[in-house]
Image (cartoon, rainbow, N blue to C red; front, side):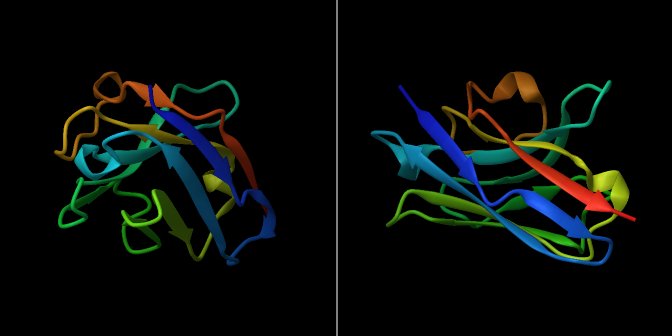
Amino acid sequence: QVQLVESGGGLVQTGGSLRLSCAVSARSFWNNAMGWFRQAPGKDHEFVAAISARGTRTAYEDSVRGRFTISRDNAKNMVYLQMDNLKPEDTAVYYCTARTSPLVARNRDEFASWGQGTQVTVSS
């Protein structure tokens, strides 16, 4: 059983930064690819970023590439999402997710475990 707890959300102005953290409780965290998804009001879950189990490969949604950075610390069982140059359209609940595979993926159905989410609000 994988448990995920997000933190670091909040209210920020356009152009500001936030760093989301995800504490992972898993027996084999070193073998789990991780991801971040988000859901804006009235919309479906959207892929944001993913990182392979060893941290050697990453993937980003086009609208966040160059502004967001996903990283992980396998010694601490932590995953991070550094979000810079935030825009109002980034406003959403952000979810930390885990795969049972070590490989990067983008499809939400490929992520078996989800956290409760953390709210990010970007004001214009």
